[in-house]
Amino acid sequence: MKKDKKKDYHPIVEVLGKRIKDVIKASSLVQKNVAHDADMDVENLRKYMRGDQEMKISTLMRITSGLNITVSELFEGIEEEVKRNKLK
Amino acid sequence: MKKDKKKDYHPIVEVLGKRIKDVIKASSLVQKNVAHDADMDVENLRKYMRGDQEMKISTLMRITSGLNITVSELFEGIEEEVKRNKLK
DNA sequence: AAAAAATCGGTTATATACAACCTGATTATA
DNA sequence: TATAATCAGGTTGTATATAACCGATTTTTT
Image 1 (tube, rainbow over the protein chains, first blue to last red):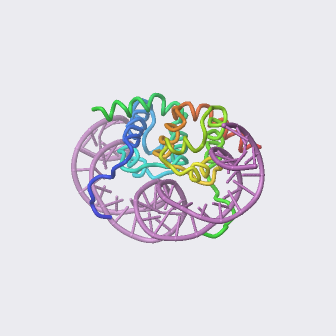
Image 2 (cartoon, chains in turn cyan, orange, brown, yellow; image 1 turned 90 degrees about the horizontal axis):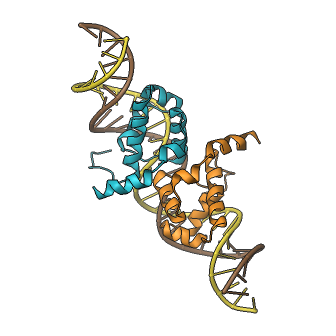
Image 3 (tube, protein in one colour; image 1 turned 90 degrees about the vertical axis):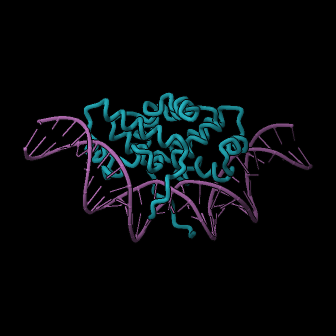
């Protein structure tokens, strides 16, 4: 895979990644444990946090499970945030 | 693609599909319009409703947008529902 | 200062999502 | 009764998610 610029994802990808990062930071969790509980490599979890990769629904479920929160909680108000983000 | 039984998805796929179906049924929306607003083929939307295909996050966003609801709303209490579903 | 965690930026093979189509049957509804 | 909508099941090419790694640097914690 060459170094071809940056993937052009739906803005949700970046916002969601930041939220995951913030949840970990605001908690006592460490990435390593979240990744383990989500049954995933830490480096790959970081790709999601960076917004470098888009996830499937089942991956979302595994991550929220590792974070000990619900999808509903993680996504609360996210549509507005995405909208604000685009206006920037 | 041959007829190889049924894909072995995370249980969320089926539950989510049913919810999408229920939202449409409970509203005045028709599948055709939801699909159009989600910028997607009706037949493919139906695959998600049937639980025949797992979606990415950006697809989820397009569908909730077509349904005029938030992801948070669509997923409210879904973890418990998935759990109940597995016990059946 | 040493150790642990987080960061950044990669690689590869394989599985699968996506989009755009199709046929044909059944069920509403105008 | 038309006709629109829903249903169930396909197909195909292409894009991309996943998993499992790598090395090296920086930041945080102990």
